[in-house]
Image (cartoon, rainbow, N blue to C red; front, top):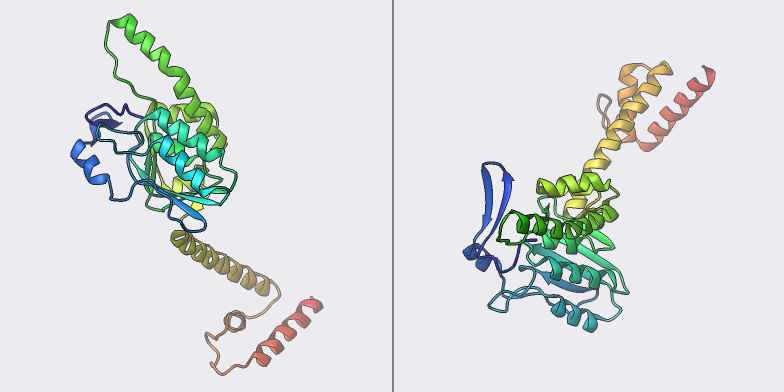
Amino acid sequence: MSNRDLPKASFNVRGDLRTVITPKALERWRPEVKAADSGEDPATISILDVIGQDWMGNGVTASRISAILRNIGKRDVVVNINSPGGDYFEGLAIYNLLRDHPAKVTVKILGVAASAASVIAMAGDEVQIARAGFLMIHNTWIVAMGDRNALREAADWLEPFDQVAVDIYAARTGLEPKAIAKMLDRETWIGGTEAVDKNFADGFLPADAVTETAKQAAGQALKAEFRIDEILARAGVPRSERRNLVAAMKGGTRDAAATDTPSAVVDQVHDLLQRMKAI
């Protein structure tokens, strides 16, 4: 949410550690394709630049997003974001334009949605983030000059803008506003996994989600295997037989010959059930 007129945006991460986005880095950030509708269905808008218009006329503005959305009409839209942020008011306007879109809005955070870009990301009906992606949230910034009275007035003037940011993040996550405010005060970088855990995002990008689903399924299968083994043990089934039976149900054998047929497994299960009934 840094002022777009600053020659550089400098973010305090820790007292002695600073992350600086220099003009040269911002120049490299800009791809050939700016915010644009892909023409596909669902439509795709790519926000891969700073938020707001710079001196050269580059950047993602609310007027450009508004024009794209008019062309999209009532189609679903996917918004890809990889932006270091920028103008807070442009970010708010883009957020409200996306919220007002009549069809589904899916936001995909490809790399980083920092500062004003993180506000835009919260507009999605569904928000996906790369496992190696980041959100960054912080209080609004201005450049102020004057005596102590003028600076106090500037701090008071900023307060409602910070509160709007708190409201937006709290509405998306369900976190307590006071907790959100503390995250803004200390400037917080939120990785993909944490973003999902804290409901800043609904899930991972499809490629990451497949991996996560496979890991969860493997974990559930392992728990089920231990549970089955426990039940069989209580039924008095010998350990070697339990292992063979579990392996057979998984489609193979462990200690028994690999030539066991499905009918043999059925017979073992039937025999087990008869034993359990007799207990």
